[in-house]
Image 1 (cartoon, rainbow, N blue to C red):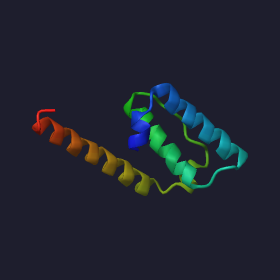
Image 2 (image 1 turned 180 degrees about the vertical axis):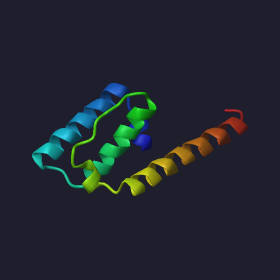
Image 3 (image 1 turned 90 degrees about the vertical axis):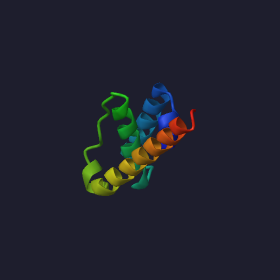
Image 4 (image 1 turned 60 degrees about the vertical axis):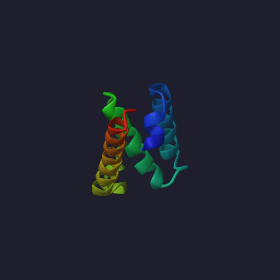
Length: 88
């Protein structure tokens, strides 16, 4: 998730579109749905709403994806608070 958070918004949306296109062509694996979920989550934090493929729910275990996203957010909050306590 950290990788996607560092991307500029236009690049994030380009990744999203490329993954969607490849899923529609059947080129990519189920793991790409999780990547898509991460991109959608980062975009959502930025206030951008991106749609999910119609078969997203049957393929992705939403609970696992939510836990992964939460873990990433907890990590960043901890890292940010550590930097603040160091005066950075």
